[in-house]
Image (cartoon, rainbow, N blue to C red; front, side, top):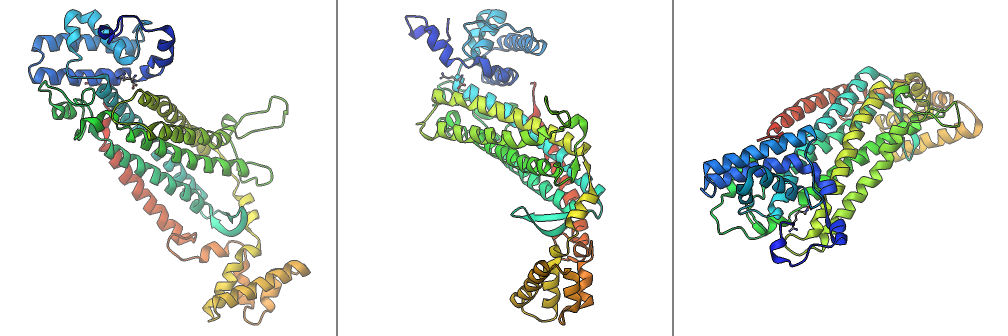
Length: 468
Ligand code: ARG
């Protein structure tokens, strides 16, 4: 029998059942559903809809069900449409008639919206924690790199030498924004929908503020229609996760390139590499490739879900059931990717000598020559063209650039020094640039930021609730 059988004269068809059920995936919400129900029954008791004895009986039944889920012994019936109906059925089995009172003043519409918020906020804090862990790995690698440098690229063409620490921290800052976005999403979604009922509230004196407080939400909804139909937090979470995925993809792409023989900037640890089934010599960077590949799927989940939302009239529509699979999958994928990339990077061997060799070309210091001329009062455009001419000359006539620079009346030996290996990064002075001192300062600001972010996350530990 379904929860809604009263209105119907025939049983649902098997085809309807197979197509509309959500139990196969929303069982993930079991423990959050139990937490939501405990809060709901506390609310019913507070306003006198349930007696203390009835509430205690229901609470005890929920505890039993919780332990069945935790111990893996909960048994589903093939008549369970979703996790909410499965748990409600079991409550009635355990608690008897009083079980039928739990759903008073509540609909699955506010129930599922509450469950999903409880689930999402907890899972997002786990993602945020893993972002911080990866940032720590990047910071440690930056420390290990000391004054190692590599070519910085634009258009994937060598542009200027940059400190390797600077390059690593660039990824670290992107992850900082990801962290920040998650905290902002958690702030915006800190609203309890419980008490909105099916869409319009209730004639019973239930108190949404009370249940919001019990569930550690900042407050209750202001509009019951919005409460049951709002899935902005899912869309936002999918965006946040997609962008994390995109950032990991960009790291992945660099590792794929750098681990080639052609670049040779990194050797991945055997335990984080895979082999070829046919070619015995191969060692492949599969984690890096999947970090790149799976970003496509994350973006798909985001755009698919936005398309689901775009045509929906207020308030709850069954379409909203489509929020779960993309969200669950994106959380799983990003959670795993953050761990795998962390492991891959923290065990990788970076080859500073190869990086240096690739960066030690005098042509990469052409801008330093132009700025040398600027310091002597030559307008930048003119300086650019003088140095451009020398580079062309050097390439066409196969004369070392240093020689041409030494011989040039406005440049000379003083400028030729700028072309020596390692000079360029040392001399760059702008804040946030790749000069030695600027990177040291950046590194300490990055550490301060990590400390602040770890504290911000700590302050959100109340969102981690699994029990009530
Ligand atoms: N499985 C449903 C979902 O995930 C639960 C809510 C069902 N509500 C309803 N009015 N049929 O959205």
